[in-house]
Amino acid sequence: MRIDLHTHSTASDGTDTPAELVRNAAAAGLDVVALTDHDTVGGHQEAIRALPEGLTLVTGAELSCRLNGVSLHMLAYLFDPAEPAFARERELVRDDRVPRAQGMVAKLRELGVPVTWERVAEIAGDGAVGRPHVATALVELGVVDSVSDAFTPAWLANGGRAYVEKHELDPFEAIRLVKAAGGVTVFAHPLALKRGQCVPESAIGELAAAGLDGIEVDHMDHDGPTRARLRGLAAEHGLLTTGSSDYHGSRKSCSLGEYTTDPEIYGEIVRRAAGAFPVPGAGG
Image 1 (spheres, one colour):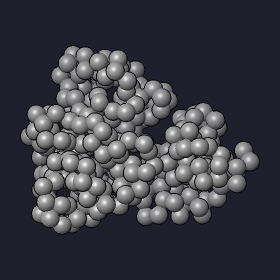
Image 2 (cartoon, one colour):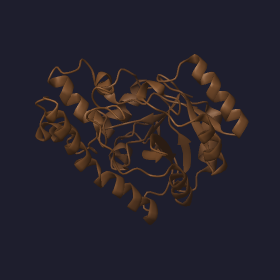
Image 3 (tube, helix red, strand yellow):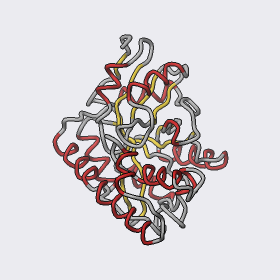
Image 4 (tube, helix red, strand yellow):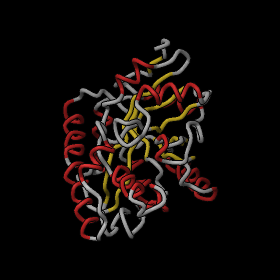
């Protein structure tokens, strides 16, 4: 089985619609794909309706969190999307995205970049607007060569010249909320240093003690020694280890199934979940 547990659609900052994403996942030879848009479940129903026969969908989300001033992302799988407390918290995070993006546009204009909020909103479309949409506007203007080049201290990286903070969950509270909604939690790309500051390794143990289920190890932003270190930390703290593409369509260079999760690990994630079940494709 080929299993990719971290992908994005136009419901947040990917370039494939949810329907396109599941069709592309099947074409890439995947057996299981998780749709984990940022702080939203808005793409799930479209993905389910379009799900090709032979492909299983894991519903999820990637949650924006912050610990001691450092941003981190938490993957949540197979939770009940209607659980009230968790739904309210996701809404708070989403509601903060527009003023945050507008603030980044304002900072960029102060730096002499002729970016407009109207264009950023157009790029985001119906998705949850975020830094990748602002970065795409910078690429269009020729300010940077690629979206990843915009995530530097000169521009949009954490603490960068045009960075604006947003409402983010405490990761311990995120774990509690996901568990209460019957879901499973995996710390996304925990040592992706190229993205900016990461939480200390000691935080992984603290999160494990609070109920964290796993850490994402095989990821494009982790080199070989980093993956080895993370596997050691997972063994030390009794955590599951996953692998995934973090696919964003044409917005990033990674491809679906570039990294995958062991079927036994996937089976354990499904076994632990109580809020939702994986959805088998019926040829939609």
